[in-house]
Image (tube, rainbow, N blue to C red; front, side, top):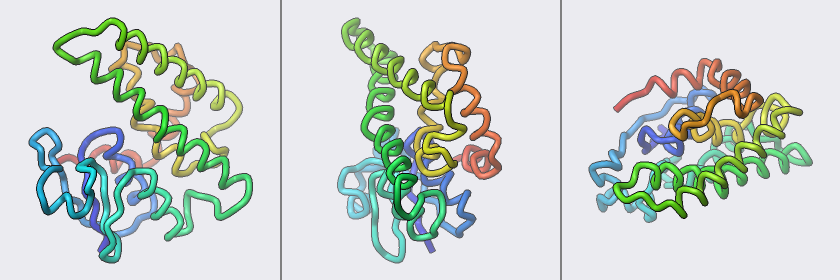
Length: 198
């Protein structure tokens, strides 16, 4: 059975949404990153980078959330087109999340809640987060989902994009993102994944 190792973060929810969407059986293992569980030798054998999420599928460990999503989508033939422009679109928006949205949103969150306030860092990351929200909003003005059809790009991005309240950004600032967040959030699999708690 598929083993899923994760925690309650925007990165951590990605595989949970996908396995719930796929309707496949899995065993869930919470890795409490606040307590340092990601550094345990047993977990490092699964993910040498000491981050979540990770999976073990048919005895093979896979880490990095984007790689996990691609692997499971390809294996089960859902949520990632097999070829052509549709596949390229899905991978573009997936990599936009893993290379831009995740790191930049994460850094803004870190510096907003750091004991020492660093104005340069706060200004730099807030500006980049707002720029990335703008890119998403422009895309979602012309498409219901990031790659046209609902898929792993949306699954990868929804947890991070939902952080507007945490960043003191009004939902009205990015109306297309807000409508997309509502649309994705109405999916039963997304609701089931969000309801899972350690």
